[in-house]
Image (cartoon, rainbow, N blue to C red; front, side):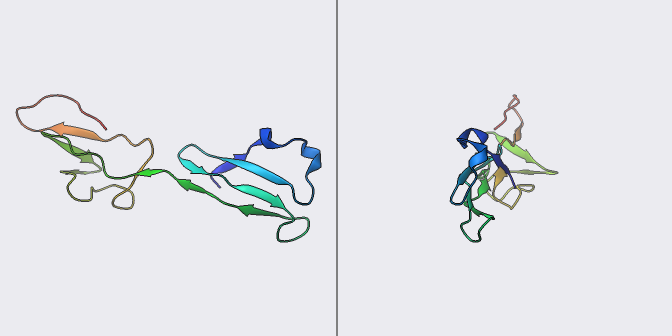
Length: 110
């Protein structure tokens, strides 16, 4: 899962024979270089080498005079933020909004 065949990597789809390598492209938010190899483990079947792993980021950066708003709670980012997936990693593309402390204005995001 999280990948699709890189059809451009195939010279001739009719030549899928023993030893053929078929490259896959990982979906957005995942990285890796999986390849299907014809006949590697059993004649007539493909074996997958490699995989696609999710790209995750650490906790959002601390912002002076602001507090990150995460899930239903706010965090000073010095500790693991609530709603952070596995407690310390955030999915690629996640946008974190901050709330400015009293006396400061703005709409910061990371």
